[in-house]
Image (cartoon, rainbow, N blue to C red):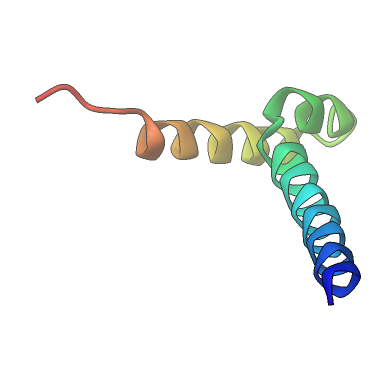
Length: 62
């Protein structure tokens, strides 16, 4: 029973790690813009998406 639970925890941790890595890659606007250097429109869209995300997530003082 314990080994089943440990295996499930290990699998969940691995899945969580993959998810975090995927999210980090999507949020790395600088690296994505570098990859899109040869495609100026794509680079502009990536930067715009990053700025939009930052504007939505940035805490606002009230």
